[in-house]
Image: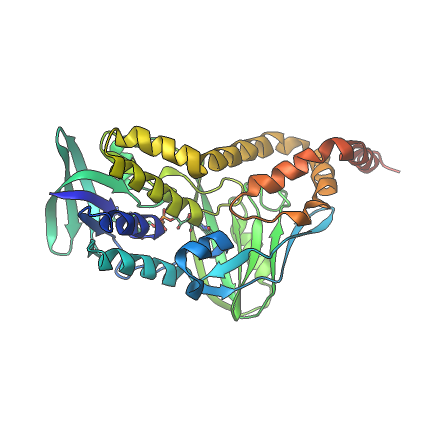
Length: 363
Ligand SMILES: Cc1cc2nc3c(=O)[nH]c(=O)nc-3n(C[C@H](O)[C@H](O)[C@H](O)COP(=O)(O)OP(=O)(O)OC[C@H]3O[C@@H](n4cnc5c(N)ncnc54)[C@H](O)[C@@H]3O)c2cc1C
């Protein structure tokens, strides 16, 4: 019997397997992919704190600037801490680290079902060799936004936003975010420098049309897409736990989920190590580490969705406060940026209202 069966060898699954194995837990990881990290859906934009964890060798770009656009103008963010990492290399590095600590890895293997028994979990896996039964004390769902572990545990799914990204063969030095919700009603569009290429993408409604337009006549090197989960779910049930995107832990305002994928696995590892009530300890550890930020972010997103119809008012309001935000630019803590904007609103509200009225009343 394994201590843990980890479903999914993305960043969340490989990191938790590494953390558990090096503490003496016996771990089996499975992934349905043929090669770790491929295909890759992710842009790889992270804060420096992620690089401090995963290693400088993965950095492929350091954006020189970052610009947010709204219909009323563009504003600079501080890009000093922003890094673009090689996402395929990240997945492969973490999986290799887990294996070097003793975790077993089976590729082209997926979870079909599992049952919780009094003393652990009985799992059915399927690979080219057929069906296989595995016994484990715990099952860890690190199987991304459409998680089969989550479904088996009967935990509600987060909302999933389809996202599309094209990689273009041109260089760029700047991260560009376009917040105009008239173009992307559910989310935003982005441009991220990535070595000799640039990644452009958008999420939600209209994304395909918009990304094609953004690409213009530039040569498209590859097209890729993925799902961004919006809204954290429960972290587990009984002896089954969810980490990373399977628990909807991406940030609901930016879609960034790498820091949460790693952090949630660390919170679960500490809970398993303490060995009391693992689920309760995991929930506590997660809340105290990064969970509060993820929840706060989700609340901000719900507010933005709710007040969508007052677009004409909030755009000048937000735009006028954005002019001061070049002091912040932490992609792991977008709420810092958004709270800074809110903090400055009372001062700027009269200005924004005048702007709104002048736009609403035809001259
Ligand atoms: C277009 C796009 C751009 C993004 N850009 C960024 C960014 O710039 N910065 C950032 O921080 N985040 C970004 N994200 C989010 C980030 O990619 C995710 O948060 C991150 O991948 C979550 O890691 P994970 O290990 O939880 O899940 P995943 O990376 O999705 O890994 C899940 C793994 O589970 C495997 N799997 C799935 N089902 C099964 C099964 N039944 N059996 C076995 N294996 C299974 C999959 O093959 C996969 O390898 C982006 C997301 C998208 C869609």
